[in-house]
Image 1 (tube, rainbow, N blue to C red):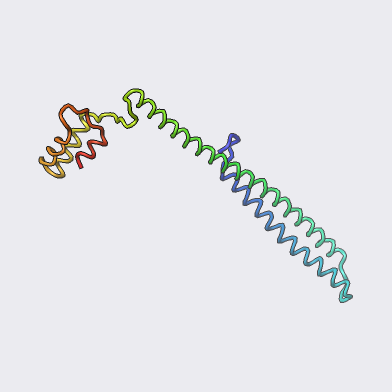
Image 2 (cartoon, one colour; image 1 turned 30 degrees about the vertical axis):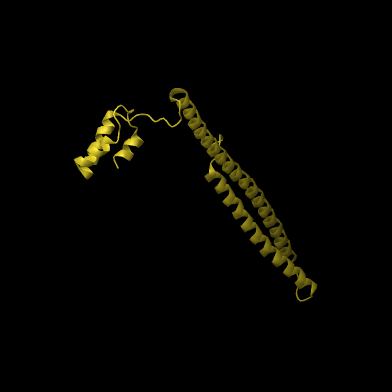
Length: 170
């Protein structure tokens, strides 16, 4: 949605309205124009008498229908421009958020390198999480599997991260 409060729905509605006018105006132009041409040809062939009033009506109808078609075409063009602006704004917003996410990731890596000397450092899992993960493994595979998984960590080694616990207890 843009600052004026318009949205895709508004732009698409305007587009449909313009296309509708083009269709109705074009159809009217074809019908009135065909009748007008038929009247002129009929008069030129000498087959019948041209009703001047009818010719005036059909000619006027052709001009009005043509004008309605042009009005619809202009509205359609304007609506397409609005749709393109909305799409461009959405794409710009998506790109901005992707770049922001990438920027935050790089800042986090830089911060981890400064604090821990590596960007691969992971926050240790809480003791409660470790106990929960061990209980879940014990329920699924028994006490021996829990003990084997617990023994994968060497004595004195840094606490395990959630990822490492997941790998150990699988």
